[in-house]
Amino acid sequence: MLKRILIIEDNAEQREMLREVLTYFDFLVTALPDGRDMFSQIAAFNPDLLLIDYILPGDNGVELCLKLKKDYRTSEIPVILMSAYLGILEHFSCCSDILCKPFDLEAILSKINNLLQVREIHAAVSEEYFLAHLPVSAPIDFITDENQ
Image (cartoon, rainbow, N blue to C red; front, side, top):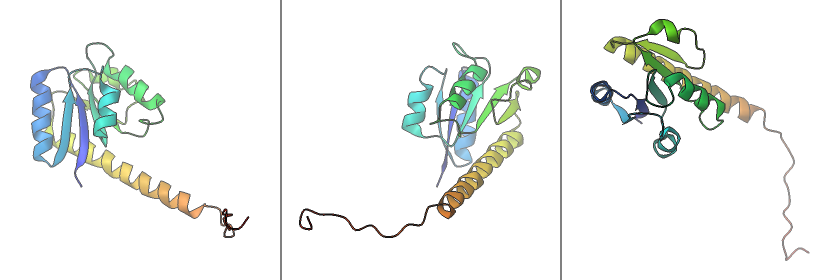
């Protein structure tokens, strides 16, 4: 099953370059020029990972990331923040990883694949833990209108 990536990047050339490269490497990709429609796009597209530029019109990438992490529906989605100002991003812990511009194709793919793999492992471990800790109870006889 192809993994889904949502890109939020205001620079049209960089947005299209990322879309083309990631599509070539078998990801389903959609992109936005800013974060205004981020939550509705997440609900419609259900991404496995987000790539968000730091400098955007409206809320910046860190502000968007903080909003994502505060919402229980999106808090577990990995976020990679991108910027040419790497020193700025190193001070924020809201994102899963950071990516320096200009892009290094190998670095982009490595970070994406690593985060997706960690997410899959986390989901499998969480499911296994949940199933192992389900309470065991005796069968319940259901009362029906006929039995009353």
